Image (cartoon, rainbow, N blue to C red; front, side, top):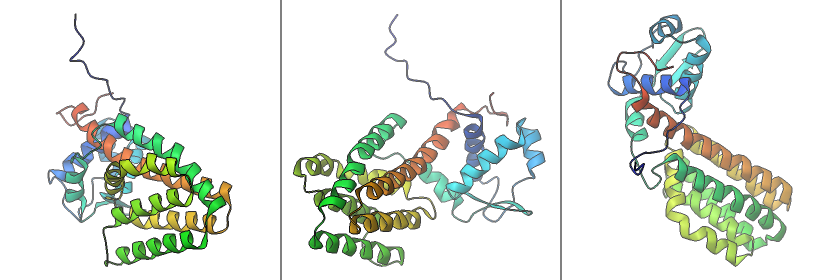
Length: 251
């Protein structure tokens, strides 16, 4: 019997199922911006889950900017939650978790070492270029200038050039469009651009200090944060089909 039509099964945790179901309810307007979600005890009873699983789901939704958890008050839907839920379901160049993993692995292998090499080989002109891009990124955060994702890619490619290894630069440069899609999607969530800017500043500081080990560590931390952000968006989106239609999650 042919298995051509079979597809790999995605391993979805219970917390991800809960997060997907709550995200869907917010997207459909069950709860509106500013509304407080039902009490944790009520949600746990309805979904037949434990409090730790619910809190894992709520933290995921808070991380992607759909809700805000207020200690002692409850969990509230944020103003941009519905539009964000729509963007979660939008597919771009990266269409699967496997493609995401491929890009993440390629970046982790290439860019951590490129950052280390840049720290060893940087020249005054290189630092001026990187500092200029970082200034433009800060202006973008203040609402002025070019698209942040495009500047983000410029920053990473400038580091690759600073490594003075043309072959490694040419390996990274052709996937610019993929990187920009990856970065743009991971930056859809509130606060991610600001977080990325802090990471970039730390990477540049390590390069300026000519500290390859520090540059490698800072780049690795940055890339892992980017991957976490996009993976969370992807998992919440992929978990939706696994939900039952009767308000309970599958065990």
